[in-house]
Image 1: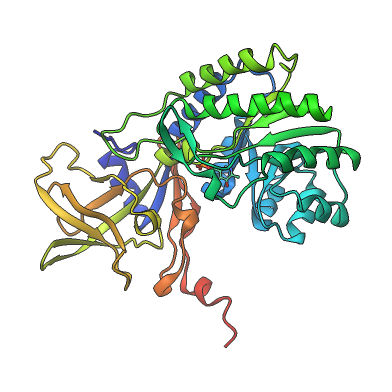
Image 2: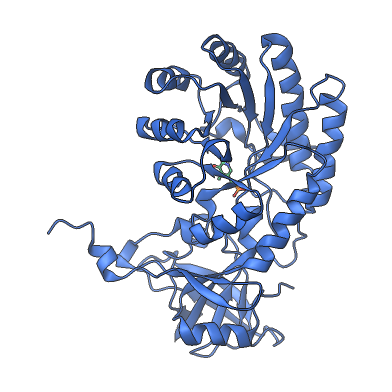
Length: 412
Ligand SMILES: *Cc1c(COP(=O)(O)O)cnc(C)c1O
């Protein structure tokens, strides 16, 4: 059972003022979850979450997270510019990118961001462009499969990111010789994990590596970035991860590995996106058409341009018909948008209560990698974003695109 964070009454009030489709965010949920993460890692004095901006690049949301002490993880020029516009600079930014263009290294350096090098060849690029900073981070990719027990969680060996173990040792030495004084290690080895063991297993690998790197190179390692990857339960039958247990699991391996090595002043960083935001956003859309052919279709006013995950990955997003939360799910529908692409389906063969034209549908868990992955295929205009405040008030935090936005880049 998945319950929407917004009641039918409140949603009617919002849709009375702001036309669908839009992404709606729940401030209370965002804040409470961020506080749970902070509490889970309170044992680590230097702990910091750097929110992965690409998941939800929306200033009003970034301000909420900033007020709770989160930094920003940027990975592109405009994400860095967004941080700058918000007055977030220096060590409050992690810059984790790959195949990094010159202009991005330059702005990251100018802002004083902590630069996370994806590849050993980037050392020379960085040196040439802006010089090697005092504090720097390297991204590690151990290759092979990432397993917990016998369970393969992901395949880092197939991923384009990060340096091999040998390269990492060499990179630390080279960076040290070029003047770097403070080092960090970063790795992102599995995505949307549904296990409380992902971070602890990753952490134990990185902690062991940190001890080896420190002994072998003499470099001072001051932080370890566990990056993103903690998942959320998209399906109603899935169990949510327990962040308190995850924090305790990392604490245990920290005490086992780093403490005896005398390295227990290392700060733990995270770069969560999905875990911080996905459940606290929903795509609100209206049923505008119905169709009865070989299947039963409900046509809605949102499209894959507003939420690409189902079209791109076949991802499951739960759907609630607002006001029919407790009604029997005794109909089966494909919930579809109007793109001329047959993958424009938010749900396939989904059991729902009877949907009437005009019903408001809540597509769950769109708070991360939702609007941010939007696009303009078929000339569709991306939806706006609305924030539901803890006190029940709501405000538009990004307007919907207009045809003028769509035509703005055209040279006639
Ligand atoms: C996408 C990304 C994240 C966030 O990942 P989630 O799965 O949303 O937690 C963090 N760090 C980097 C470098 C990323 O590319």
